[in-house]
Amino acid sequence: MVLLSTAEAAPVTYQQVVELVLRDVETTLGPSARDEAAAFVRLERRLGNVRDDHPEAIVDTLQTYIHDCFIDPTWPSCPLHHTHPLWFGKEDSWWCVMDDVSIAPLGGLAAPRDEAS
Image (tube, rainbow, N blue to C red; front, side, top):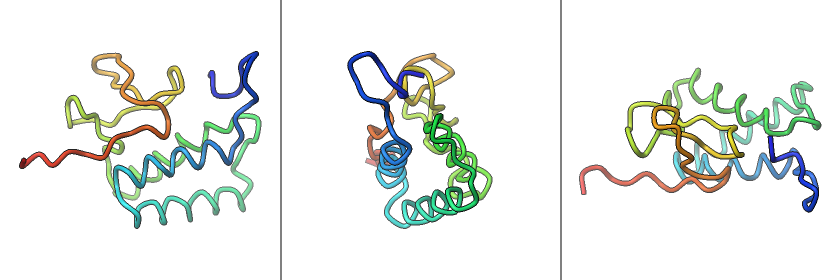
């Protein structure tokens, strides 16, 4: 996972990963979903379910929470197919596994387009 460090860059912290994934939640699901996601992340931290040496794990944990609680069972939805979620990890990006392509870096998801327009 590139997120943790490179020779030129400082390691990415847990808080930086949280800020990026919450940006994606707000952009794609709105401010109330961001508030709920932030509360979940705080709870995970209080419960000790956080690994500072593997900060990107919170992305997977939060995505599972969003799916399991039916906030959005396909979050973040693939903008190419609209039938499955993107998955995070490869090259620190959200990926469409059907086409094996990177869609956006963490924190860089675009707002969903209105299909009616």
